[in-house]
Picture 1 (cartoon, rainbow, N blue to C red):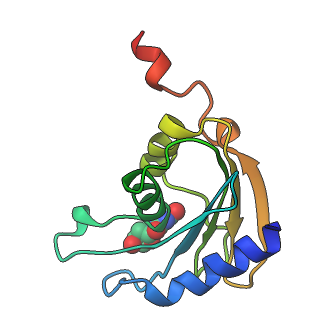
Picture 2: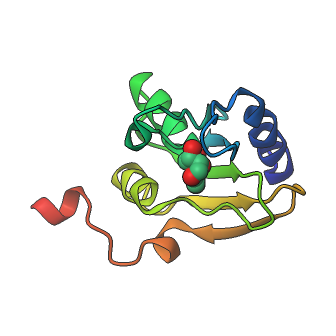
Length: 131
Ligand code: THU
């Protein structure tokens, strides 16, 4: 799948966002090497800290369906002027499964920029760190 299609699907996923507190809708798509795409949106909560980000929703969906390897590209579509890079907690969660993941950060206009997770989280703590 092309980056453009993955980004378009992430933008589409914003429509499912539950963000009554921040009004900041986010959609995410996670592409795996076999072509499978896991999707997500942010889901907020009255207990604000219980909120889950769009990309972590996609991550949890992938893992809970048995897909823990072969993650290639993650697109995150925010609804602001800025490109929507993953928060620190999401970077850490992603690092566990895909330290070399490509990340596409999308803004409200559908423009996007690319970075690797290793750029976003250098010298990360992962499974190997526990050995
Ligand atoms: N959010 C995401 O879903 N992904 C990000 O990368 C940044 C932040 C969500 C969390 C919260 O629902 C809203 O955006 C505002 O922080």
